[in-house]
Length: 235
Image 1 (spheres, rainbow, N blue to C red):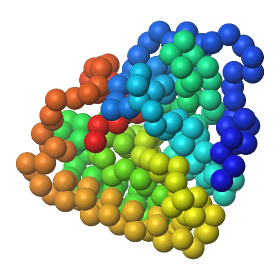
Image 2: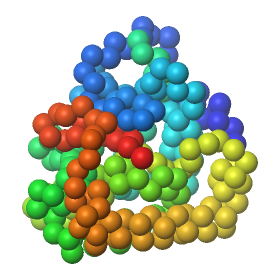
Image 3: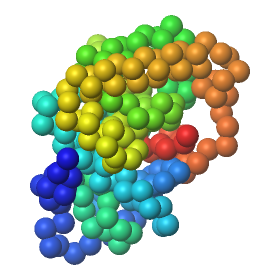
Image 4: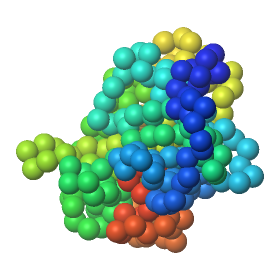
């Protein structure tokens, strides 16, 4: 995989001064999310200090790979590119917002608040996993905080949006092979989608699970959104 080539195509810095990040809207295990100072519908993911994994570069690579395949969906926020900031290299991504500009809840929040019923949550998971399988999109992390529920409008059905955990966590030979050989990629996507579906449905059906009972959060509260409309990285 020519990862360097793809990164260069999406370098948003272009010799300009570094972005000054002011408003933190999310914190995860490896990264923080800051609101873009000039585009409030964009977020900037930056690695925490002393976290060596270059997840921003990996995420950008997989985003470019999916675009090359023509995969665009409301389940998938766009990654715009890399930018230099006062906190290191950041990945600029679309924030996942409701039509009125407010933040989207996680599935756990939507269930606890009664925004979706248990039956509706099951339907959301089946629909999203069907899209992963049909599109051949690989899910690397099954964490329940890696997707949000978006309610487009009163006349449209809600859907899940994957804000983290796609592609891979490590740029290794397995990832290269999956992105190179279509049959292997689609088989991997199907297997991972089924595993994600089964795990998430089990959590929905178990009223004692973390979907129904909040635990200590890694997020910075922001309007009870558990931190951000763009990223959660609890494992």
